[in-house]
Length: 435
Image (cartoon, rainbow, N blue to C red; front, side):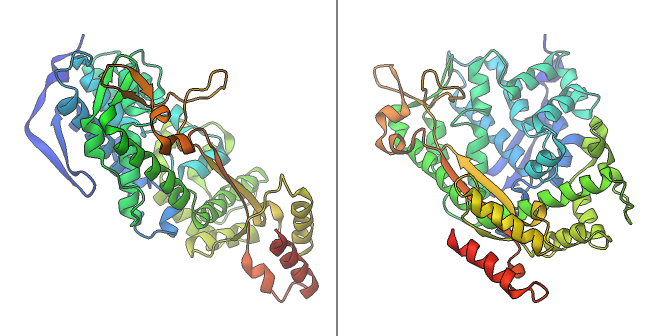
C-alpha cells in the first residue's frame, strides 16, 4: 500500500535546464527528495564517459547529467504517450520514474577500469545503495517498505512487469536514447543524433514490453545506426582505450605494491579496503574520481618507477601508441615483443598491453543461442507484431553481427630512447610494423 507521500506533488514544479532535452521537469516530491540525497549527488563526481575527455575535450559530463536525462525521457513516455492507454498501469508510474533516475547509482570512479582491477560490480553496489542504510533508501521506504526492493528489481530486470523493465533496459530504452544524444553533444560529433521525439510518439505499451508502430520504423533504423557509429567512433576510440589502459595499469600497479607492503609516500587510505577485498558500502560511496585524480598526482612523486611513470602519463596525457595486433592470431609476434620489452627493461605487463572491444549493434531472437537479447518489435496495421530485422533491410544487414577490434598498446618513445640499444629498438619496430 503506497503512502500519501507517494502521491505528493511539489507546490511549484522544479525545472533543470538541459542542453539535450532543453528542460527536465520534476513534479513529484519523491523524485525531488531522491535528487537531493548524498548518494545521487555523488554522481556529479563520476564522469559519464570515463577517460574519453582526454580525446574529446568536451566530454566532461557526469552520470548525474545522464541520470536526470533518462528520468526525463521516461517521464515524457509515461505522462504524455502511455497515459490513458489500457495496457499501461498508472500505478507503476512512480516506480519506473525512480528506477530511471537511480539506474546508475552504483557506478564507481572510471567505472570499467576500476571494476576490472578491484573486481567490484556497479550493479551489486546499486542494489546495496537502494537497500542499505542510505539517504536514498530512507526516501524510498517512505513510499512503502517494499518499494526499495521493487526499484532494485526493475534495475536488475527481474521485476515481473516486463513493460516497466523495457523502458529502462531493452534495445530501445530511455538509457540508450539519452546517452547516445548526450555523449554526441558533449563530444561534439553528429553520429549520435536521431529523432527521439518521433520514436517516443510511436511507442506503444504492451504486456511483454514496448513495441514501435510500423510507421516509426525509419526513425528506429536511424537510432540503431547512430548507436553503431557512436560505438565505432567514440566509445571504442583507440586513444580513449589507450588512456583506459594506462589508468588500468596504474590501479593494477598500486594493488601489487600494496600486496608487497610497499612504503608509499602518500598512503592510499581510500583504496585499502578495495585492495583487501572487504569493501563496505561507506567505503564505496566515499570514493570518487576527484579523489582518484588527486592520488594520481601524489603518486607522480613515488619512488616506484613504474607507478611514477604511469601516473605522469595519465595526468599529463602522455598516452601509449597502438598497433593492430591480435595476440590470438599472431601469438609468436606477441611473445617475441614481450621478450624484447623485457630485454629493454620495460615490464610488458605494464608497457605492452593487449586490449579488445566488441559490440553487437542489434540482436534478434535466435533459438538455442544463449545471451540473445529481446528484439525490437514493430506493431503492424493489422495488430501483428513483427521483429524489426524482418521488415528493415538496413537492420537486417547488421543484425547479429559482432564487431571485434584487437589492439596492442605500447610507449612510442621506446623506439627513440637512446638508452636502449639501437638494434633492439629496430627489432621492436620491425615487429610492430609487420602486423
